Image (cartoon, rainbow, N blue to C red):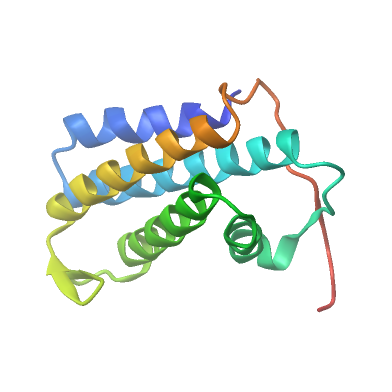
Length: 146
C-alpha cells in the first residue's frame, strides 16, 4: 500500500463523518498518512541518511526536516509538528473542546484545520521531492537505548 492511502482514507472519513469518533479517527489517519509519506520522501531524496530511532521517530523526522535549508523542508517539519499536536488532541483528549495553539475547537472544527495544514504539507512535499511515494515504501528505523 502507499502511505497516502491512509491520508485519502482520512479525507474520505472526514467528508462523511457523522460522529465524534469518526472525526477523531479521520484526524489520526490524515496525520499518519502524511507522516509516512514525508518519511518515504525524506529517505528517497537525502543521500545515505541514518535510520530513524524508532522510539523518537516522529520527533526525529520533524527535526531532520527543520535542520535542512529551504522553505519547503521547514514547512514540512512545521506542518508535521502542527498535525501531531492536533492528532494527539484527537487521540488523547477525550473531553471537548480540543485545544490547538491556545484556542478551543470542536472536533469538527479541528478536522478542517487539519485538512488545511495537510494540504500545505503536501504542497511542500511536492517542492521538496516531487512524486508520490511508491507501494511498500519503507522508512528505516532502529531501536536505540538513547
